[in-house]
Amino acid sequence: MIAHRYRSVTAYYSQRRKWVLILTLALGAVLVLGAGFYLGQSAAYNGMGIDTESYRDMQLELPRTQEELTAVRGELDIERTRHEMDRRALEMVRQELASQKERIADQEEGLRFYKSLMAPEEIANGLSLRMIELIATEQPQRFAFRIVVQQEARKHELLKGELYAEVSGVLDEKPMTYPLSQLSDDLDDGVLALRFRYFQAIEGELVLPEGFEPTGVSVVATASKPRQAEAREQYPWQLQERFTHVGK
Image (cartoon, rainbow, N blue to C red; front, side, top):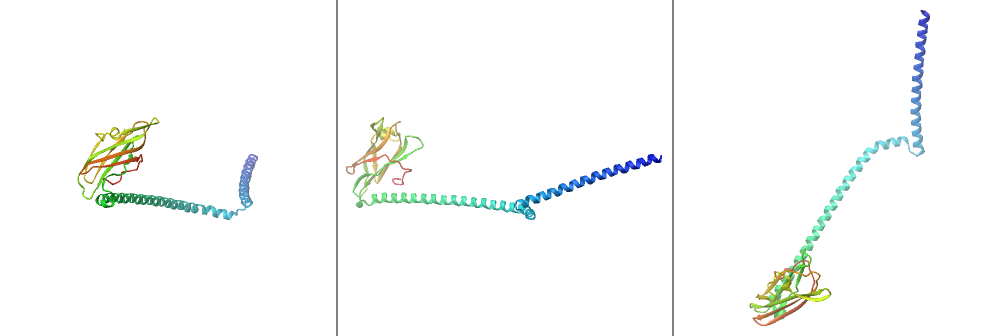
C-alpha cells in the first residue's frame, strides 16, 4: 500500500515538473520572439536611418496632419468655387457691356437716320435706299430681310411710288436671277407699292431654291408723287446677326 502511494506521488510530481518545464519553455519562446521582433524592428529602423522614438512621434502626429490636410483641401475647394463664381460674374458683366454697346450703336444709327430725314440740307434731296438687311434663320436657305426706303426733303409730302427687288446668284454653275416676290410669301406682287411721308420698311422672309448660291440683291425704287424720282442700288449678299433699330 505504501509502495503504491509512493509511486502515485512520484508520478504526480513528475507530471507537474513536466508541465512546469513546458510552460517555462513556452514563456521563454514568447520572450525570445518578442525580443527578436523588437530587435529586428529597431535594426530595420536603424538600417533606414529612422529613430524609433521619432517614428512613434510620427505615428502620433499622423492623425493631426491628416485632419489639417482635409481642412486645407476644403479651403481649396472653397477658393475654386469662389474663383468660378467670380469668373461667371465677370463674364456676365462683359456680356452686359457688349449688349449696352450694341444698344448705343443702334441708337446712334437710328439718330443719324432720323436726323437725315429732318435735316435734308446735309444730304441731297429726293428718294434713297438704305443698305438691305439680311439675317439667317434656323432653317437652311431661309432668310429674313428688310428694305428701307426714305424721302429726304425740306417739306415731307406724301410720297407714292413703287419698289422692285431681285436676288441674283448662281445655280448649277449658271447665273440666275429671281424676283424677290417669287422667293417670299410675304410679298403679294412683283412690284411693291410705296406710300409714305418719311420712310417705309419692307420686311419678310425669303426661301432660296435648293442649290442656289446668292451673290447680291438689286433694288429699284421710283416715286411718281409729289415729284418723279428714282433710287437704284446693287447690294452684295451679306448677312448680319440682327436687324438694327433704323426704320422701326
